Length: 390
Image 1 (cartoon, rainbow, N blue to C red):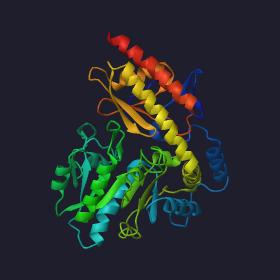
Image 2 (tube, rainbow, N blue to C red):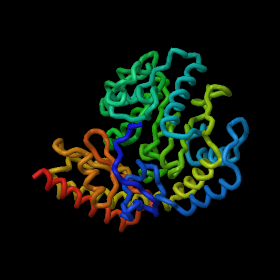
Image 3 (tube, rainbow, N blue to C red):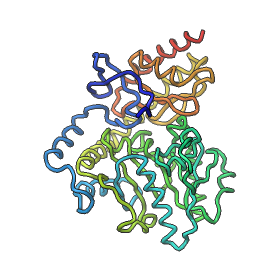
């Protein structure tokens, strides 16, 4: 179906941070499949894990115990706040599952009226009917009426409006620590801490969508660690599989107490292939040395982008983001597609975002040299866009 405005490039293979097209042209991939290819392309440890598992077992269904699920769940529980994990196939499914966990929690707690979830304008939680309603973006909801009920939306920086929105039917507050699709807009750590306190005061669950921010992207294993808060429920995906489709819902035992047999399920969720890859990704990314390296690379990337803002002040209004989830807001006379297209012509892949912004999402394995090269290519692309407008 014609649901994508695709660029006219066909990639044949990938090597680390690089993609190679059919015609042999090499592209520095600073889109990472929209923050998915955390370890780049054809990472030897991921390839080996997938090959080894493919020769043993692909699928049995969740009618039986799956050894890989138990192993990966144990790792996630050891590394996070969670006591329990549900595996699925994508970020949208993970967010759907998190919504169900929150509503079911209040149902079994004797408060079935508490079904509404407060979310934030500019959010993106997926393309299913419920996650579209959760985000409340009119552009994505158009033509898909009736809108799924049960969501209330407030501006990200309006704490008074958030507090006023809480009522007897409120079940949870759901947010992305950094709104990726929404324009790389970060919640300051103190804001996340204040929202956690608000949840505690009103008996609400804090649900975090870390689909894009998680698995090392911000220099911590998960972005909420920067705020020193503990959520009740968290959705992850994207980088979790390093390119293989896999997602998960993590929760405390208390928050997940309503998720009993028959309340939720997935045919393919947590299949042996996905678990083999996800297990390897977690082993690599969770190493303290790896995360420290991400933080150092992030400083280099941010410095480069701030330099571009100074040298291309006619185009760039603001530099945003944390870690290797960075981006920049463009002046109103420039469209993200212009910059993304100009960058691709220079051999650099970027990703557009809302709020007239462009995302810069290098693989977490990007070298200092590759980050510097990416900044140089982006500078050339911006110069081209500036020349078009003059």
